[in-house]
Length: 505
Ligand code: SF4
Image (cartoon, rainbow, N blue to C red; front, side):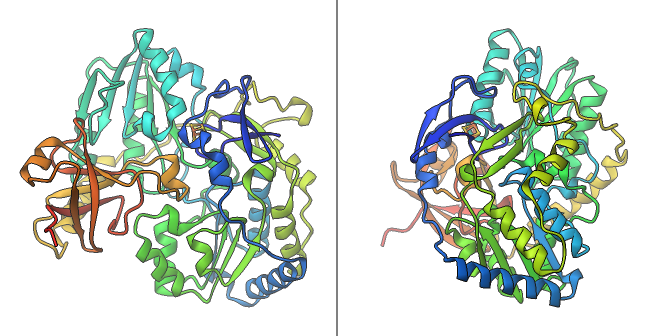
């Protein structure tokens, strides 16, 4: 069966049959190649499935629709971050709109900023100047790396801007301080950079001010810009869901805690997996009257669901997805079970049934594709160009944020929080797979703490203390500790921590 990898928004093509993968050499994005996550897809799909019967499902749909119809509509939040097809996402949007609500993608916080569709990957290969801003392609979007390497081999100048060096790809590195990076980014002088390509990462913790600064940089240097995103259909869900009235994921969690949100309906979205502070998510979930979860696999969020609506795994879904370039690809699964669940909910709420074919046609229209006959994965549809109509007061906002950021650091009750713990996002982390059981430190830190070779380091935050094996990285500055896996002590995207040599018991 022809499918695509759900690991990130590059959307690499492959075949999957009887639980095994096969390389698809004519896949437009990856020409048959897969990264470590793609190679491990059989394990990912072998995670325990949730079992149900027809009558149990019918009861669950009844209960969910009763809740949605009885609760104050303004107290229900619908969330789908892009882990499903355009058609299922659109069905969810239609259900939400019948309840006068919107689907929150987590990207609504970026408003009308042009973040959805980037540039064709071929343009990256042909670029002469490239900026990598807060992105490490090797770790985060591995199949992007070969495009950048091709540009490098063709003589491209590659500049890295971020919290640590990128010695593999970049010839120039601008290392920013995590506690003051937005202002430093704003003040950065990149003499001579012009007519290039800027590549950055965009997710729920990306500060919109950073996005604005990078967009302004693209504009002032006559460069193109592309924002990589973590979920298979992030770009599709951004195109379909208008940003108006959407809440960010942190705002939704705050709403659950304050009581403004009483019911949460999550479509293929495990907030415990994707948010840095698990304990905060769990407190928010425990405050709800009802948590409705629609997905196929047992993950941490299913433990907290009041109602489980059991759908199919991603490769089994019928429908389309849009990658970071705007390329539309079909997932050739045959199941529309997830859409059927949403349609049944709609009927229970005395609204229309939702048919796959109608949804598919609406998706094609939204993507500027005339019909199925003109759906071609080798051609990127033309999207309307969004004018760069941006707030020009970035500087003032950043000044405020600088003050907030130092205030939040100084308000940490633990003293001597001299290190910033940050995630190095990668497909395993976003999908709840604990692939890397270590943190990374630089050699000076290891020497200063007198850590034992091959031993552990103790990490202390306001969320607790853990011990982890460590590795030395030559690219990380003194004040940074990197983790590629979720850690229970993380408070935020960048968390102040203290490091210690563990005391032997
Ligand atoms: S995780 Fe991303 S880069 Fe890796 S195979 Fe999947 S789509 Fe491609």
